[in-house]
Structure formats: C-alpha cells, structure tokens
Amino acid sequence: MTKRIVVYRRLPEDLLAQLKRDFHVDDFGHLEDLDDPTFRAALAEAHGLVGAGQPITPALLDAAPQLEAISSVSVGVDAYPVEELTRRGIQLCNTPDVLTETTADTGFLLIMATARRAVELADFIRRGDWQASLGEMHFGSDVHGKTLGMIGMGRIGAAIARRGALGFGMRILYSNASPKPALEEELGAQRRELDALLGEADFVCVTVPLSAETERLIGAREFALMRPSTIFVNIARGKVVDEAALIEALEAGRIRAAGLDVFEREPLPADSPLPHMANVVALPHIGSATHETRRAMSQRAVDNIRLSLSGERPLSPVNEPATARA
Ligand code: 8YV
Image 1 (tube, protein in one colour):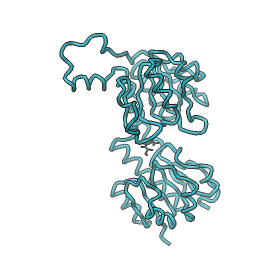
Image 2 (cartoon, protein in one colour):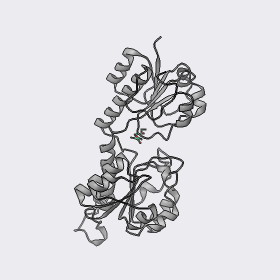
Image 3 (cartoon, rainbow, N blue to C red):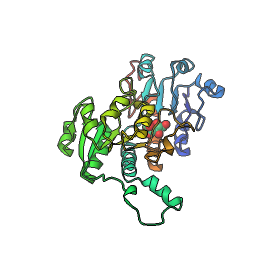
Image 4 (tube, rainbow, N blue to C red):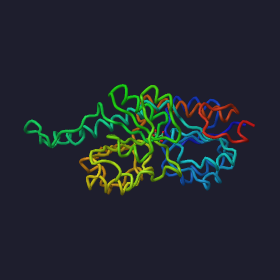
C-alpha cells in the first residue's frame, strides 16, 4: 500500500517530486486554515503530515486515525502536543541545526539595528529629514565590548553568543537550565540566575523554546530588573514575553529599545503599537527566512518524513513513541 502524506507548508517542487516517487502526496501549498474541509478529508487518510506554524490539536489528531509521523518544517515544536503524540505512537520530527546560523544572524541583526537605531534613522532619511550632520539626539550605543545576556543557551543561543564574544569582544552571561562548561571555556561565558543577568546585561537576548515553563517568563517584574539602557531582543517565541508589559516598559523608558522577530500573535495584529514605536525594530518572524536555510529545512523535513514512514529512524526525531518503527 502506498502511504499518504499531507503537505500544508509550501515545499520546493523538486522536493515534492522526491516524496511523490514513494508516496501519495496531497499538497495544500501554504495552508493557514487547518479546519479547511478538503484538508480534513485528506487528513482522514494521511499517514504522514509535513507543515509548520499552526497548532496541531488533539481534535485534529482524532481526525487523522492513521497518522504515523509529523515532520515539522521548524525547530520549535511548541505547536505540537508532544506527549499526546508519543502516547498515540506518532513520531514527531523537526529541523534543528540547519537553521542555527541563519537564526543567529537574525538575532545579531536585531542587536545591531536596535543599538545603532538603523531603522529609525533609515526612516529619517526616507522622510527627507537629513538636512544637517547628526547631533547627539540621533546617536546610538556601542555593541562591541558590551555585556550580552543570553536567556537560553541552546544551539541558537550559543551561535549568537559566539558572534558576540568572538566578533564583537562582548562579555557573555547566560541563564540556562543546565550549565554549558564547553561554552564557558570557549567564550568565557558566565552562568547567572535570570534576575542577576537581567540587571547586569546591556543586551538581553531571548532564545529559549516556548514551553509551560517559559511562557511569560519575561514580564513586568523582569523588565523592572533591567536598566534604562538595556536593549531587549526576542527571536524565540512571542509568548515567552508578556507583550503588554514590554510595551509598557518601552513607553515608560524602563528599557531603551527592543528588537523583535516574534510576537504573542502572528501575524502581528494591525493595531499593535510595536512596529510604530521609534525604539522598536519589529520583523515579521524572519529568523530562518533565507533561500538557503528554508531550502535546507524543507530538505530535512522531507528526509524526516520519508525515513519515518519507511520504518527507519528519522534524522531529527523529537519524541520516541513506542510503536514507531515497530
Ligand atoms: C520557522 C521557526 O519559520 O523553526 C522555527 O521554530 O520559528 C522558524 O524558523 C517557523 O517555525 C515556520 O513556521
């Protein structure tokens, strides 16, 4: 029997063709609405699912009784009920490693753009306001030699810290569930309790995955621990931060600026003040969005689903369901 794969995130044609050699593929391109009746009908027969973004709920899994594997085109797996998938014997895979450096580039882009007020000053030229050489009111702050506080020191956090330490001579602090002795050795990074890090860092950069433990990890109390000169960067997930508290801290001058690639709700609601604030650089979740990296993520997702449905170990499994590959 030819197994059936439902795809709801756009994949390059040649990668789809790779899948079609061995599987029946129902390709929905980029589908936002997983309640779509045609999608639901395809799900009823699906053995594999390839996509990203929208939450996969237990109710949706009920509509997919034959499902054996889900291959997410993302490293983050907050959209999936991982324990429930394991209980149901469904393999979940993600795309770590291939996006680490690109996402770290995005993190550094936000550090640089906020510190040097790049977007605000590019707008200043665009408006025709550059009539004389700039004065102090337009100056930014240095990045090199400053203290970078990483909240989360996984693969992406380490790649940002490496850029900071080796490229910009920054002192690295980190708060992470486990110590990272190799990075302490390599970068001179020092582990701190979260509260201490918030008070000491010039740049606070969030890279922790979203989970029950990290949801709203940074709120009014944490912004109050930062300094008026602190620059806050989030490339993880919007829900790690209490966005109302962030807006309040920016408006009240409790922190200097924020660089944000992720938001509580995405796409960002049109009435959000964040993209209009002079001290905010807001990007539409471009962390991994380069041609090269999205291609590598798609390839990984295709390899993962092919291996999972062939009874082989996928390249990047997230869970270890008992019945997978039985
Ligand atoms: C993806 C991401 O763009 O990999 C992740 O976890 O956040 C991004 O790289 C996103 O998940 C795709 O929807």
